[in-house]
Length: 192
Image: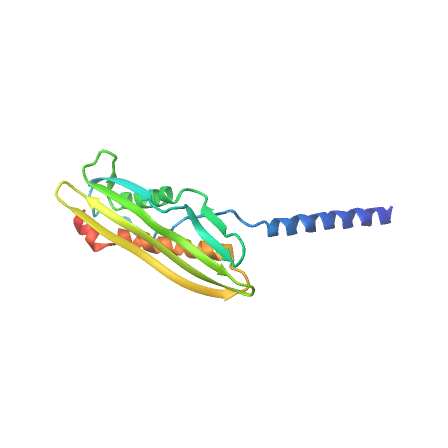
């Protein structure tokens, strides 16, 4: 009876170990893109109405590409479309600043995603990353147009393999910083 119980416990332990190892080795297929903005609520726009649109002009919608010599690239996209994330984030922040987002407003803010990629160059015992996010903001009213380009670039390197969780964190921090730059832009504030 005791031997049978020990075999059952060993079998359970082995099964749990295999399940855990399998779960840990499963590579993610998507990134969670969730920029966090640190702006205070204000009423600087005092109910001004604008229409907001965000357009993704990239040729492909993945956010991370892992390149290994002689192998097909591994690509990871955002769980939610990037233009939806940017639109939701900016809408919430601008509403907190007193701007009213209205599809029928005369003044229009158009944000174009020109580039948004982290390229990981994976070597045998190390990796290098290059990332760039570039957004163009175009604001039009009945008299004039303001166009500004906001971009952020970074490079990093590390031993062994790139950690997807770290890439995700870095991407979210960079996107947050870029969106904060848009929201605090003196040119945009004075134009609106």
